[in-house]
Image (cartoon, rainbow, N blue to C red; front, side, top):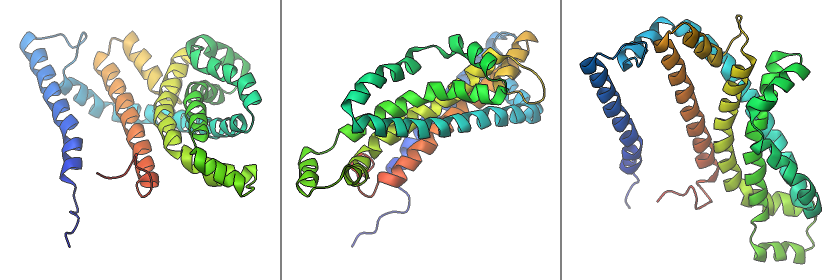
Amino acid sequence: MLKKPLIDDARVRRALAPLALGLVLLALWQAVCVTLQVPVYLVPSPAAIAGTLLDDWSLLFDALLVTLRITFFAFALATVVGVLVAFLFVQSKLLEACLFPYAILLQVTPVVAIAPLIIIWVKTPAAALTICATMMAVFPIISNTVLGLRSVNPGLLNLFRLNRATRWQVLVRLRVPSALPSFFGGLRIASGLALIGAVVAEFVAGTGGSSTGLAYQILQAGFELNIPRLFAALFMITVTGVLLFALMSALARFSLKHWHESEAEA
């Protein structure tokens, strides 16, 4: 009997391929900056960005923690609200028809336009920023969860009805398991949107002080023409977004790999 290898070569190649491409692009970026002697206040080299990241690590890391706190609170709130709203929608098509257009408004309304009002109405800055980020992140969870809850096997649904299953039993034992792949897809999208919403809300708020996020550090670096610090802050935001997406993907793989084909290993 053949034993399964501890390390999947195909998975390792898939993980190393984008990393190798990134290293090549960074090397080209560094070579262009050095060869053309590009001023650091225009486009800093990767070496200059890395040096700034090390020198200002304490400042940038503290700012990252502030942004992450808002992101995680917004993501958790969006998940709870999104799932509850989706459960309500799937119980009544009339309710869904009445309220779903208003859920779409959360997606199409620019946070930049409404954030100043929320900041004025909500006196606590952290709560205001969390609400703004939640508004950006909640719609994908509502949309994907509703889609998953509606996409049940008709034969299984008829079987449940034939056995006189209650609405609660149909929801918990049939609709929820069927909706998990779509739900995790919504989490992947919402995690990035929560981070974007937190950064955008910080941009709009534009407040200084000790409890400032990465957006304020970007604004301050732009005012001071400290472009390497600006790029370092952008780098931290980008890496954080990638890690959040990877975390949601790992959670989906852990939850679904043993029973659903979307995460089954080839």
